[in-house]
Length: 421
Image (spheres, rainbow, N blue to C red):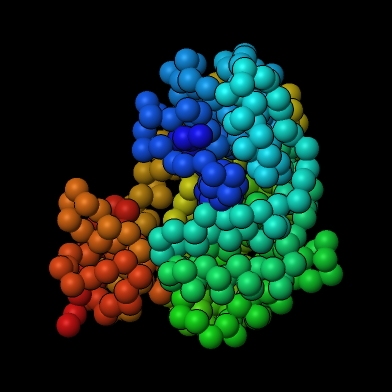
């Protein structure tokens, strides 16, 4: 069997795609280099944003003559929607990826089978390749946000044992990984179902002897507040990028209440202040949703003011769209032109703040981990210790190298560096 895999969405989805490949390879399947050469096409889907959902549905329509398996969050969150667009596809939920070969075999035989239950993923084979290893530390979350469909798809929190995760990291590094991305729907909730915690895991990762850098994925403010001091200690270790993704979503406490977020704006401000005071050059990433149904013009202006004051390095700006099955979908929606205008204003502010922050790094020197190669432009990209991306030119550079770099300039999205011999 030859399969072609397309992945949409977050780092957790990308990690699931590595499991999908591992399962397929373990059954003797091979990966096709194009859709045309594949017996079956597997789409690993994402349901966070309406725009992404529409992109996936358009892709499904173009593939309607192919044997198709749709995996990921969309089948679990809205099975009927997928069935309308791909009535003959087999569906695989994000917690059933171990059944993907069964689904592929079924669709090739003209059968229609869905695998949407919660099943064990710890012992599944994983495809490992390249210098970046994506390692999920948990499934699901403890929250119940009124706008989020991902909770519907992935369910309640289920953390993986520390011993398993440490073995995964060591094995990945032995096979060539130099960047380890610890990912989850909310890394801050890790261990709450096991009587453990994220900082307990990070303390053990910090003591591993191999040379690599780990990036800790998104954590909500209420969890970060529980262990900020030891989390800062971990980020100050050479094993971790000085990077923290703390989503705020809104600068208005009233909107946060309507979103059913378990923190207030002051909690977010406190988390950022402590991180910056204890972790030099820490990169702060956050998320903002524009046009939530209850958001007034004053609420939006509070969010703009918060971004101007905090000056986060990275802001993932999202235009609110109602997601099926969520409480926010049942609220009266704001006019589309208002949501569009607010999103554009916020995106422009965040671009300006990012450029201002990056400009402060020009002239400084860092040890950069080289993680990607752009064949078209004959360039490499890497990450400085706070995870900011830097573009490099050099003939003697290889993926996975740690090289000394001087920052020479900036772009809207990152830095430009020169390798120092």
